[in-house]
Each structure stands twice: as C-alpha cells, then as structure tokens.
Image 1 (cartoon, rainbow, N blue to C red):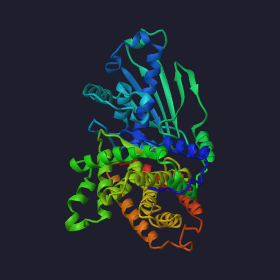
Image 2: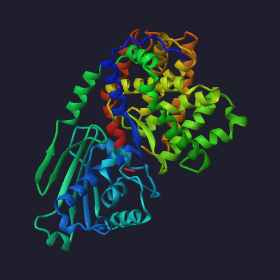
Image 3: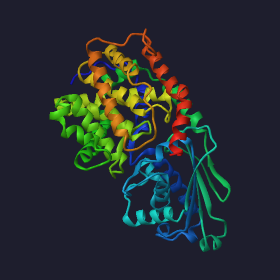
Length: 454
C-alpha cells in the first residue's frame, strides 16, 4: 500500500518506537501476581549468587523458603481472584511460591514460563505449610511489591551469613528499583514514579502525532507489532476451544444465530472476550500486554485483529491500525496511571475504537470523535480486581468501541456541552485521566475494603 510522506523526524520516530517496545511486550499470566513472582524470583536469585555453597543444582525445588511479600492495595486487589497459569489456583500466595521455586527474573513478565509439575507441587506445599505471607504495604504507591525471602532451618545455620534477600518493584510491573542481601543494599535506582514521570514528559505524545506516525512510519519499522496477532489470537482460539472462566467469548460465538447475530460486533466481542476468559482462568499461553496489562493488550488489539480477519485486511494496514490502537491506549494511560479504580478496558477499548476507524478509512478528525464518544460512554466503569469476570467487561468495552467508531465514521461526536467532553481531544483525555486517578480514589479504597471483608 502507498503511505503518505512521514511528517515525523527520524529521531522522534525512534523515540516513539522505544515507547512501543517499552509498553507492548509479552506477559504470561495476570501482571499483578506476575510482578510478585518476579520480585520473589529476584530475591531468591540474589541468595543463590551470594551463597553458592548452600545452593546446589536443583536446590530451589527443595529449599525451605520463607517468603514475606508486602504489596500495595491495588496489587492485592488485582491478585486476589485471578488464575495463576498452570496451577488451577488463584491468588498471590501461589504466585509468590512459584517465583521462589522456579521463577527466572531474566524473563521479565514471562517469569513463570516453562512450569513443571514438580515445581507446581512444591509451590503448593509451601503455600499449604504457610511459608508464604502476603500483607498490605504502608505505601501510597499504587503499584508496589517488596518480596523478602529467607531460608529456614539447618541450611540457614550452615551459612556464613544469614541468607535473606529482598527485591522491590515500583510503578511498572517489571521495574525492580531496589535489591538487598543480608541487610546490605545491592542496588537502588531512581524512584519508579520519578522515572515514569520523567519518561512520560520526554514522550510527549499527542493523538495528532500518533495518527501521523501510524500512517507514515516505514512498514519495516512497525511490522513487529503483528506479534499482537500471533499471541492474542492464539489466546482467543484457546478460549473458544476450552471451558475457561465464565466462557463469555465462547457463549457469544455459540449463540451468534439465536441471540447475538453474525455481525462484526459479535465476532469482535466473542474473540476478545474468549482471549480474556482463557487468560484470567490461568491459561499457560502468554498475552501481548499494553501498559503492563495483558487484558488491556488483548482489548486494544483483538477487535482490530477481528476486523482484519473478517474483511481480509492485509498485514501492513493491520500493523498500522495496531500501532495506532496501542499508542492511543499508552497515551491515555499516562494520565490515568498503571493501576487505578477505573477499569483498564475503558482505555484499551478506546484504542481499539481508533484502530477500527483507521481500518475503515477514517480521518484524524473521526479518530478524535471516536475517542470522545468512548469518553462519554463508559468512563466510570470500576475495576474490582482481576478475575474471570473481567471477560464480561472486556466484551462491553468492545461493544462500545464498535459503536463509537461507527458513529464517528458518520460524523457523529458527543459535543463539548456534554459532561467531561471538550472540543480539544487532549483535554478530554486529561479529564478522563483525572477522574480515574484522582476522582475515584475513594471508590478504589471502598472496593478493596469490600473485597477484603468478604
């Protein structure tokens, strides 16, 4: 296909590509428990590096670990009820135990790749013997994990030093900002929040720039984004085959004649929800995440992929649509934060609405209309933790995305006289972010209190 002249400098293009590579990456399992697994795995690796004499090969499968994990309320909220891949269990304790027994921190958000039955069995044993403690940290950070690992019994007595270590994750699910061994700090980096803020200021994205980049960037530079299709479509297909979670996607597809119809909206809802069904129920396939969330990565991409599959869109046009949808979600997420009381599918489905507008030949103005239509529609959908029910919210988000795109393509846009909508799309995005990050703080605390008291 012919692409317009690129209005963006090469240096800026490289900066935007860096943003994409930073925020769009594979993740195995829900990223909140995975962050816990990652921190625990790093702490265990520190012990192994500093005490080689007590850590022979295969030691992790038998080691008498004691694991203490302090997490922010939002990590706890999103880790309480979600399935952990390959275990048939839910929650942070089993995620922490697996991180100790077999996690590989070098894999980042795929820290639990390649689980064995023996590792899962040993992790279950640690949980059953109450060797894993999860507690709420005294922190204002929304995304925070401090995992401390020590060794019980004779192994500890035989060591020259007390073998205990910790690792701290802040503000990004895979950002380790501090490590320690035997009460000595090994590494302490810039505050995660400060780094994120500084990086966001450097990024300085706008919807206009995102649209221009998606339309004109050299295809060879952006073809990598097609891994979205490879990973998330595989999850969707698995969700349609198996009986995962609430079977939202499978039910939509199996009732397309009697209830939902065989149109694009139902097709997109079914595929996207099926991927979420599988992921939230503990499927062992990775998702391509966006802004630290697998569900958001699924929701930002699968409606766009569904359109391409249904209407025979070529790979280059699909890649440009996926670049657009992912960057719009990343841009909005900056004003919201990685974790909040606002359901992430609001942001992600706004991105997919933009991708659908692009695939139907929409203009920049129509893209802005789709964003405003989404902001005026499902802003306020709350996040009450990660769990199998997320697939229903994902389906709702996809439905809204298709509606918003269709209206935008007909020149219909919610006016600035309505609610939080402004004439300027960037101001609208900031309003949405302010509601989710500041306005809903009390709701976030109440949701967590309700969940903890059940």
